[in-house]
Amino acid sequence: MKVCFISLGCDKNTVDSEKIFDFFNKKYKCDIVVEPERADIVLINTCAFIKDAKKESIDYIKYLVTLKRRGIVKKILAFGCLVAENAKTNEYDDIFKDVDVTLDINKYLEGLNNVNDRMTDVLSFSSFIKICDGCDKFCTYCIIPYLRGRFKSNSYKNIIEETKKLAKSGVKELNVVGQDILSYGKDISNSSEFNIKKEKPIVTLLRDMSKVSGIKWIRLLYCYPEEISDDLISLLKDNKKIIPYIDMPIQHSSDKILKLMNRKTTKEEIINIISKLRNNIKDICIRTTLIVGFPGETNDDFNDLKQFVKDIRFDKLGVFTYSREKLSKSYNFEGQVFEEVKEKRKKELMDIQKEIVKEKNNEKLGKVYEAIVEGRISNKKDVYLVRPYFNARDIDDKVFVKSNTLLISGSFVNVMINKVDGYDLEGVVV
Image 1 (tube, helix red, strand yellow):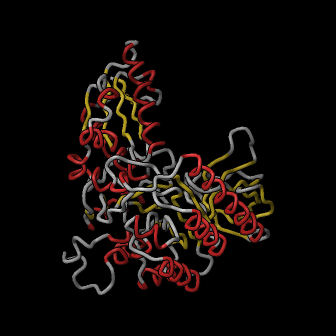
Image 2 (cartoon, one colour):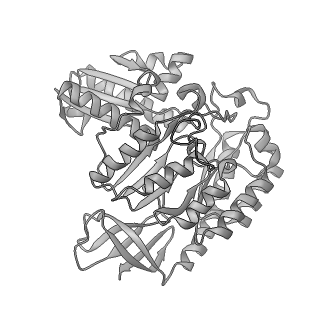
Image 3 (cartoon, rainbow, N blue to C red):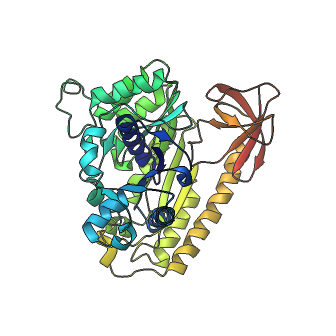
């Protein structure tokens, strides 16, 4: 049978999909096709984090259903967060009525989180590795704890084994993911791997991952600011494999809004953490995400956030408008903000950030950075897409370089930046 695998949503979903697809493929020995129009069976991993992600999942399922009604696709198997949410709310019963199988992924993750076999993606030199699942933070805007359960660390032994397996397959860059990666080990800290250590388990894990031969870069994604410890900062400072890049979502600067969100940090604490990172780690790249239009956000709260962004000058910044989710605690909060106000505030922040990025990019002119080669631009034989340490795959800006000699995907080159083009950069191999 011909099977098409579709994975939507976050990087954590990508890892889940790779493991489930590998299991399915080995069990049924299927022919894999890229286009659903050529498939007998389609497996789709859905997302439900915010309304835009839900819309993408719903639209895709509706399209698959039309293929099924036309006799092209025989069966549709859906799993992931939208399926888990529907199991609690029945909000999308009409969407799933023509889907043959819906699976609650949480029943399968217990076993799959510690499985090392994966159907890895097209960027074989760069891979995500998920070290934990679920979340205990219970931010009031977030439904992840209700869909994925409480926080649970994956096995230390299996993570190291998976790292070795990925390295053996040619992976050079590991992107460490999980809903709350810096809390790794808090539920297994008394196990034999950690009970003689005085540092946080995540520091022990990262150090041991960095010892695996073949791995050159380790990148940290999804780091709650309150979990950034001195021993983690020391590791980032001293370990050359763990690159000076950290994805640290803070969501807001107003103490009032942070408290309503049930965040565990204040504005002053966030500023102190950022200062400590920048003072100790040379050229660290800090990425963050913000939410505008949270219930109760006044003009004063938003002005506080605007000034905060201007003062801190984040290297990378993503802005989301508040998504009102039925399973979240904030769904019934007073002071819901109009959608047009949310969009206006988002644009204002991104306009501020655009100027900051322009200034920071101009500071890179003439400097040389080591970069990983992602591949050649298809319509230009001598232009390649590369990523220095300050760009994470799939989410950050682009760097294009010209080279008269062939560059192999997954190799590392030194690049001198010689042009700024908005958010993107251009350079030459030196």
